[in-house]
Amino acid sequence: MKFEFDEECPVDPGEGTGKFDVPSPWVRPDRLWYKNYPEWMPKTLNYDAIEKYNGVFCVLKLVAMNFPNNVAINFKPKEQKYTYREILYYSKKMANALRDLGVKKGIPVALNSKNCPEFVIAMWACAKLGAVLVPINPLLKKLEVSHILRDCGDVKIAVVHEKNFALFKRSSKEFDLEKIILIKEDIEDEGKTREIPGVEILNFHELLEKYQPLEEKIPINIKEDLFCLLYTGGTTGLPKGVILTHFNILANLSQLGNFMDEFKEEYLDKNYGKISFIMVLPLCHTFGMISILGYSAAATQLIVYDSLNIASILESIEMYKVEAFSGVPTMYIMIANHPDFKKRDLTSLDRVAAGGAAVAPAVAKEWEEVAGVQVRQVFGLTECSPGTHMQPQSWAKWIPASIGLPIIDTDVKIVDLDTLEELEPGQDGELLIRGPQVMKGYWKNPEATARVLIKDEKGKIWLRTGDISRMDENGYFYISGRSKEMIKYKGYRILPAEVEASLYEHPAVLEVGVIGIPDKLTGEKIKAFIKLKQDFKDTTTEEIIEWAKENIAGYKYPREVEFISSIPKTAVGKVMRRALRDREMKKQ
Image (cartoon, rainbow, N blue to C red; front, side, top):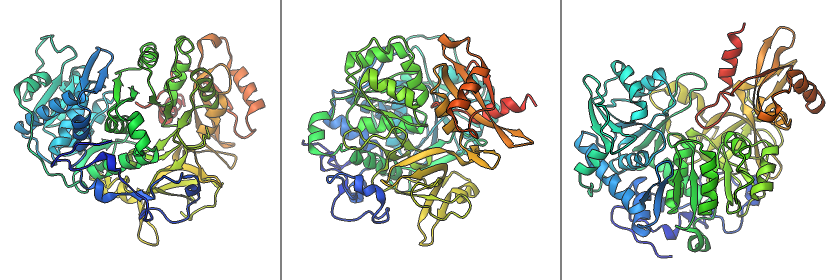
């Protein structure tokens, strides 16, 4: 397949970004997982090719040059469609507008919006300019938003969806914004005038009409210039800004693409520009962002949702013969429990990935029976851009409980929690990661950076993830939980995720979150918070506990059970155990 490229982005995607004749500079030799790699797998990335990219913006430009009329964004809530040519055109217009408003390379631009085409356009515009994208989750509250805007630097401009405007108005005295670019829910609706004293309010689509596309090349130093500051969820306090360069993101896209055989000639001919992906993950989150960047690189039709509209999602899968879907376990549970799940033809799906946590075996089995697809677990974290482990559908053995194998140029080791000595296969310890996708550090937080980026005896830097993991004798990895969430019961160390996975086997359990609560006799005892399925509302807590006694190890089953209407979760569906602990503490 022949590809066009130009002086700004002198890269031929058809040549690939892998090397086959040199060993990886990142991975120690003879790692166990290598024996699973197919023969066509590159040994390392071609970093000379990656460094030809003038930043992440080249991902969009190259696709728009080669697949200009392919649908890039199909925004289902409003039935709006944009081709890759149009997304490129509008992104360059917005880049010109931002530059005229004072934004230049290295300047942070906050982006606070639900999923919508304007989010994508603003993201690419920042990449074109070399501005630092600062996505802010629209579900965050005043304290967290104010912290991010103050922490990330001299933020003068924010792109804000009108659904979140009120929060900015209430918080305006706590930061020094000069301009807000407002994304209107209804472009045609004049509506009421939005005002904040001392802040200029501009209309996103009026700026697109006013400005011409920015054609000038803005030189990007991909190893030094920041693509984004992604603020972590703050499960242990206020969010920390993760520094990700253009190189971090481009390297991770290349790692994932090569690992999934996307640069093989037969893949390019068969799939490039010919598949569809359901995009319901929040774009402000690292999982959502890498999904939209990666699938855009393959000229994919991105069918975008701003909420989990299950009936419409299932209809779209059937209508468009969608091949790819990524989500978190909560999404798979809710979709499987929708009445349309067994009515729609979902057999087109062949790349279905779950991140954030393991999908309960009972849920994975139901997806396989109904849709004929394996929900394969993947793993990553914001600090790794985010991808580190996968089980590609095309070649890897599927182990439902496993996060899979380390991707190209990613070294991994499991270490003792106290001594940091590397453990043997089969032993649980902390997961450490090394590779080109690992962040530069936490923004303006050298202490936190020093705690997680550590040097080994050879001076090589490793990321401490805080995740408890193990590697089996074949090089497959398994996540047991977070070290900070470990429950200590009578000397046993119990990970909440293990108990949750067992409880999902009970037919009445729709969702569950497990924590440890203080106990004078045992140290901590296990408590499960459960949301029941609609058809099992008569189930009692005693029945759950008795079932657990019969089906879960004696030191692992929950001693207390409480039914609640909803399990608190992060934006991407992870159980917020801290919120459950706070709920419990209020009772004390």
